[in-house]
Length: 229
View 1 (cartoon, rainbow, N blue to C red):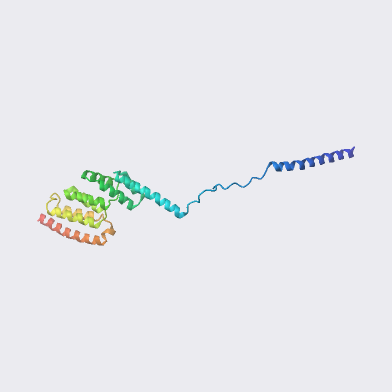
View 2 (view 1 turned 180 degrees about the vertical axis):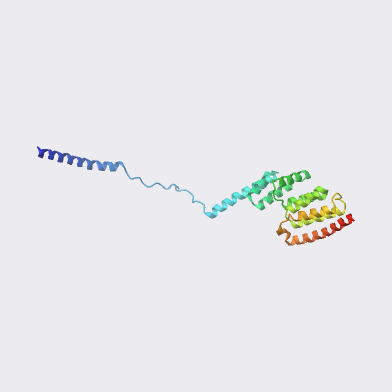
C-alpha cells in the first residue's frame, strides 16, 4: 500500500514538472522585449541654436523692441518714454525723449512735456533743455528764467547751462527781468549750479562755467551793494 502511494506521488510530481517546462516557453513568447525608443528629434529636426546664434536672436528682438518705442514716440505716445526709462538703456531713452521734443512744436506742448518729465522724475536730456531755453529766450520773465536755468542744469550739460546763465544776465542788464533782483539772480545761478554732477563741474567745460559764474557773481554783488547804498 505504501509502495503504491509513493509511486502515485512520484507520478504526479513528474506530471507537474512536465507542465511547468511546457508552459515556460509560452510565457516567454507572450512578453517580448520592447525595442529602444526611437529618436524623438526626427530625421529633419534642426540642431539647437548655438550660444552665439542665441545672442544674435536676442539682440535682434531687442532692436525690434527699441524701434517700436521710437516709432511710438514719433506718434506722440509719452508712455514710450516710461518704457524706455525702464529698460535702463540711456541711448534709447535719449532717442525716445528727443522724438517727443521734436513734436513739441508749441509752448503749450513743450510745457506739457516738461510737466510729464518732471512729474515722473525722468532724466532731462540736452534736446529737452535746449528747447526750454530756446522757448524762454523768446519771452523772458521771472518764472521762465527759473525753469530755463533749472532744466539746463538738469541736463548736466555745462555748456548749455553757461549759455542759459549768460542769456539771463543779458536780459537782466537790458531790464527784461525787472522783477528779478541782482541778489535773487545770483542765488538762482548758484543754486542751479550745484545740480550739475561733480564730474561735469570738474570737466573742462565746467571750468569755463565757473569762470563765467564768478564774473556774474561780482557784477551782481556790485549791483546789490549799489542798490543798498
